[in-house]
Every structure is written in C-alpha cells, then in structure tokens.
Length: 384
Image (spheres, rainbow, N blue to C red):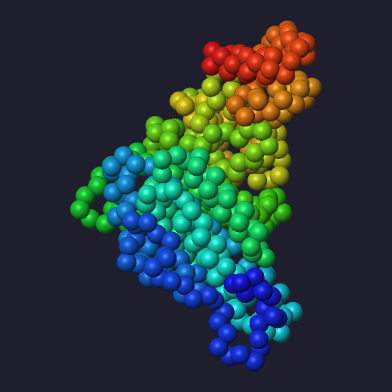
C-alpha cells in the first residue's frame, strides 16, 4: 500500500522516479506555537525528532509553570516488521523498508490532518524512531485529549494495513521537579515524562505479544510526582473510570495505604463510600471483579504489592453490569450509563417502586420525567 492507498504492485514498475512517500508542504507542519522553525521528517512529514527534542522541553516547562495542563502521547505501529517482511516476500515491487516507509508516510498524513482539526492553542506532532509518533499539547480537559487520541487511533486503523497502539499521560505543575535551577532540568524532566509514557506503551505491547492482550490499544499512565508516591493533588490529570461499554487500559502504580497495599489508577476516584465495581484483567490473563475505592480523590484497588517489580502493572478495566441492572428498561439503563451512575446504590425496595412508577407511566412525557427523577435519585444516593 502506498501513501495514496494503492497496493505496491499497482505502482508503475517502469518509472524509476515514483516516490515512495508523498511530498509535503513544510508550512503545514503539525505544530501550533510549539517547536516553531522545526524541520520536517522526510518520511512522515511530522516534526523531525531532533528539533522536537530540542524545543519541547522549554514549551512544556513554560506551560506547566504557568499552571497549565499538558498531554503527551506516544504511538507505535504494531507488527510493522512482520508487515514489511510479508510485503517483501509477496509483492514484486517491494524491497528493503519500502513497505514500512509507505505505512509511516500514510500514518504521517493522517496524523497531520487530524492534528489540524484539534482545538489546542499549542501543541505539535513529531516522529520518533522508525515507527513511532509523539503528540504533545496544552490542554483544557484530559478526557477530551483521550477522546481525540482515540479518534486518531481509529482513523489510523481504517487507513493502515497494521494497527497502532498508543500510550498517554497528563502533567501539571505538581510534576515539576522541586529543585529547578538554571541548568538543564527541563530536558531531564521532559525525558522522564516521555520515558514514563514509553514504558507504559511497551509494557502493554509486551503483554500483547505473550498472547494476553490486544493491539491497537490506548494505555494511560500517571507520572510520579517528585519526592512522593501519594495520589495526585491536581485532579485535572486524572481520567474518569470507564462506564457503559468502555474499556480502559492503564498502568497501575503500587502504593502503600496504611497496613494494606493499593494499586493506584490514573483515574478519578468514585464518589460515595460504596466504591465502584469494575472487571479488572491482569497481565497473566486472569480477571476478577474488584471494588475501586477513592484514595484522597484518586481511584485505587486494594492489592498485595509486595512482589510487584517495575513501574507498575498493566491492567484492563471494564464496567460491571450488575444482575439487577439487566432487567431494567432500556431507556432507564441508557440514562444511567450516560450519567455514569450505578443503579445498585439504591435499596431493592426503592428500585422496585421506581420501576413500577416507570412502567405505569401514561404518556411518553411522564415516563421521561420519571426516568429523570430516578437518575437524580441515584445521583443523590451516590453522593451521600
């Protein structure tokens, strides 16, 4: 497949000047206020990594010291080596890394278009290594960045013959080093942030290679604030827990909480004292239902952490659909999912009364009003 979507075999074999990559307009580089003056990577058309690595530390430091929120994402092509070897073995016009270049050229073109559609006031998209992309942006909302990266992942899955897995994180002023002097702390700090994202990505990819994970995922991690392992003080860096049919891949960080161990999730803790039940899948493929609690505002799972090595554990989180919720009307279930609420916080007798009132609604407007009242009641009980 070439950058225009054509198979290698459709390229004119008698034209030695056929380019393996498209020619980009340097003025359309995927950057906005950050990394200005950077060169274009010849294959992807993204910001060349040497210039990104030179400029981005100052941009991140300025954004964070000003109280801003920053999102970082790294994407890596799944199985690019296998794709290249297969293309070289089966397509007469492919050799060397030509098929890989065509994948990366298309990845760059899709990423450029996607980047220019984003509302960020500052950010950039750069290439990294032979098959990776880095995205950095100043944000107003972490969830919006997560959704945007998911859109990019889906677009790439549609355009490319291989999948792309990504990992991301968020940083705020609390992640800045305490002792910031006139030296090169900005580059050291930036490298550690990128290293945290890169480790998260390849930890999840390693699980996939052992047959206990899937490709094309988006994994979320949380950089450790300097000097401590406490929950995040700035709640802006946390994502909401998954609801409905959502699946969230995370790198959980082991911490101690009194006499028990906890796995700290890069998510906002559930409201109320009951916690939230999630289906948690571990790297060895085992899954069980766990109660997620709030540890000073951040989601955490009780877990024995004595034998955990490395920076964390790759987990897959999915909501649990309770048995009592399976029999409720579809419109009520949809309203509860949209609100991110758990029907089971209500006692059984209250559930029965509310279901009876909904079923006895004389008109559609009355039914809608009663469903709204039920959602409000569940929300009130959740907060209590």
